[in-house]
Length: 324
Image (cartoon, rainbow, N blue to C red; front, side):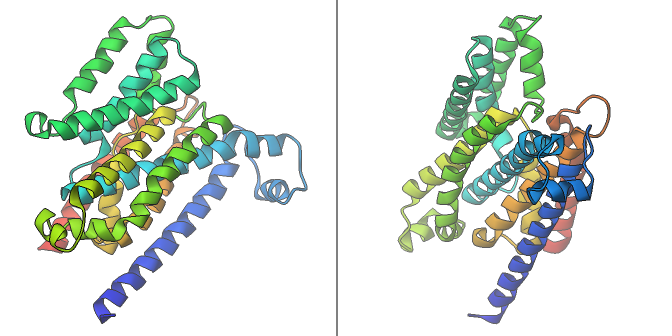
């Protein structure tokens, strides 16, 4: 193995382990803070099985599922963003820009408008996200990767919604939140995220070859059309699954892959693991801040936009300095 590649792999491994450590610390902190604080000794008593009262209920029934949900949503959105950026060879691509998030949102708000149960709303969100990606991908030349159709559809549904009951629920959901996340949501979220993430891990080497261009990839034996379809389907499934339970949470799929790329470089086999862990840590930190910042929980979409915009500008400036 060439020495520069060995150094890059060692750096990627160190960054990945460091990100895991940060995620673990954030997880422990998130379990303790909230409207009902839990001290470190009480937390240890619950985790070691020596306490079974209200602290155990708070940890296992309320905060635990929400923390795992924030990790899964963050990992899914950031990994999908990294896959889209590598596949399209465009660092400014993300699930939001491609319209997947808006498509999933349209499916979900239609489900809310029709009074469907939670499970059906999640299915509608999956279908909306996949349909949006198919639409954008099929007519990319005409619409240039934006999602005006899906955004207009969401606006129309909001106009038709009952202003007393449905409209507040739709508006709050579109801002992004994990406030009502529970175990059933976690069970619904985990399988599609895993199904979408596994192909990205298995195909990470081929996706690196795709960055050379379609002709070069074909010359090296890669089935370009089939690989592109698989990557798009996997990333879209993860995005739709995340949006179906958390609402629209922007910027993660754009900012986190940039940060990971600045640390370990553009090679997807090194980029994907770090991106997933950083995305999980970022959204967990944002969600913990959202539920502790004041008397009323701040929507996730608002916080990710406030935090993501300056971070993204800083990352772009840092990337230009590195490239110059």
